[in-house]
Image 1: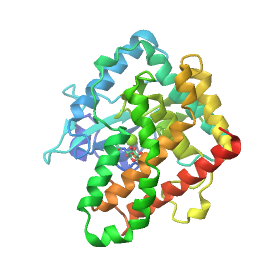
Image 2: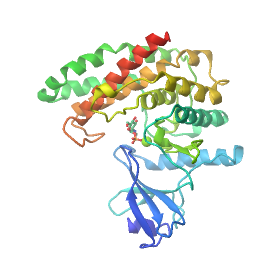
Image 3: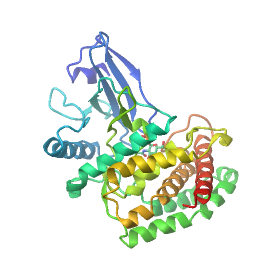
Amino acid sequence: MQEILSRYDLAAGEYTIEPFGTGLINATWKISRTDGERSFILQRINTAVFNNPGQIAENVRQLKNFFDQRFPHYLFVAPLADVDNRLLVPDADGNVFRLIPFVDNSVTIDVVMHSAHAYEAAAQFGKFTRLLREFNQDRLQYTLPDFHNLSLRITQFEEAVANAPAGRKAETAETIDLARRYRGIADRYDSIVAGGAIPRRVIHHDTKISNVLFDRNGHGLCVIDLDTVMPGYFISDVGDMMRTYLSPANEEEQDLDKIEVRTDFLRAIADGYLSEMGGALTEAEQKLFFYSGEFMIYMQALRFLTDHLNGDTYYGARYPGHNFMRAKNQFVLLARYLEAAKSLAL
Ligand code: GN1
Ligand code: MG
């Protein structure tokens, strides 16, 4: 890592390096100068997932140009160039790194405990998409093609079921059945896409709370982690907020009784997102606001279950059955979400 840091002219010995954050895909460290003067975020990109990290760098460069020209006051946090003016730095083993400035006085949170945070975060994701309305989407590359294509996720799930070792298949039989019973959620997605019902927009595609920077007073500053910014549908962003902000217990929780849907947080997500995007959303989109949560929770449940059946090759597992547990967690969340919809008559 010293080798990488030297590429940015950061002298060994003047900085401390500590693991940072809870992301499942890339590896992240905080690099702090020992005198407290400045800090950075160093990331090693998971190239098994992002086969072409150059596309991420290019997307970020395009977005930065747009913001610089059109909204120069927007806080756009972009990777720094190294001494050779590269935004990505490879090491001898084929790993790819990037260095991002740490925004002074910014904080991130891992669990949403106050609905005001849900509001602020939703407003930031809404603002991001709103500001990019006139950005030419053709300039963006699909860093992960079909990332939120729910039909494809079903296909991958069925393939995993077909190829899974008999043991894993037998243990998960009930959850496999459950997954199939929710199939209607994917059919609805198919009809939305086939009918061209809703517009493609610039979508973040990873709206968990830790991807928002807050100031010390709890006001949202901007969104970060731009790896999956691609053309897509708003249901991805609103849905992932539903998935990750509504329950006080997150996808790692093993005590599934702790999973609940806080309806005041649902309100906060809607109010925050609409405070920025309300004027832009079409009628068809507005009708899909609640569906977005079904869509994303179901997709994540399928992805965890698929990975379990495939032997944890994508997300990894910190204990045996980890992805199976995560999948069961997400199916409970989905059930609670649908109950909440009923009680609110949504
Ligand atoms: C991954 O790495 P992280 O935690 O930002 C995943 C998301 C999932 C999330 C579930 C590229 O995001 O799609 O929702 O895990 N990112 C990718 O925690 O697959
Ligand atoms: Mg991410």
